[in-house]
Length: 327
Image 1: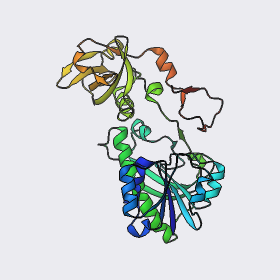
Image 2: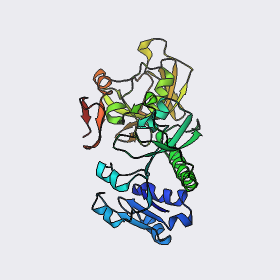
Image 3: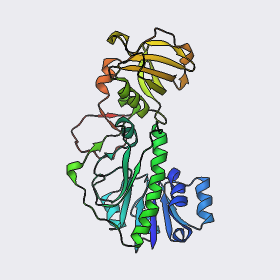
Image 4: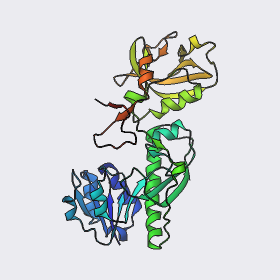
């Protein structure tokens, strides 16, 4: 069985190492956007066929033998046109790290925001709709509560994705795939988030919601935004406590004291212990004093619910919705 895997350069090596055995690698062709040194060495070591291209087109695909093959999109750097989907054929599947049809679109930050534990990744047939094709394989697992930041959760999900492909190929060989039409009654879509636009802290939230919101914009997204003395700052590396809640709305956001490497801020229903207050990526926590107050200007809170346009070719469900372009 010939296998085509389409994966961005920084994910491709792990997929090749973890999802395929040596026998399968003899029949694998990698399509990626560029080659890193480690990826190039592994391809040579295992004698794996590959295509490295900046643009995936019908013309560039002429170099790849697609006959009697299955194609796996695992972190593709490209959006597939209708012509490309038709070219790859009926055995064209995409890795999606959510239990489709729930949570189409963005995933990682929402796992933190929604405090999710029971979860699924799946493989679905690639169609012209966004994550709408029939599901052919599901993998269920628990997301450990000790994973606090987007980067930690993403690494965990990527491991599960690679395990899923390995299991999927075994099921494919044994003709044990499902072909499950997605029940749109349960469909939901998570917009992509930008810390710059969407990551502004609403200090009226309770301590639990603040904790999840701030962590959802943590590493690698640069932190959640707010103001201190009329200067925009970003907050990362926090712990929550139900102790010392604000006694009045006027006390919300007040710095109570420093404690070890943290500052303690009184909020609704508890307090936050914050380790990183960043201006231009520099931690200014040593300059924070008791009585300082964090707040967010209303215009930024009004703006935070806008949908962000990351790429020109991005498809959205409501084309009339106002988009904020990232500069």
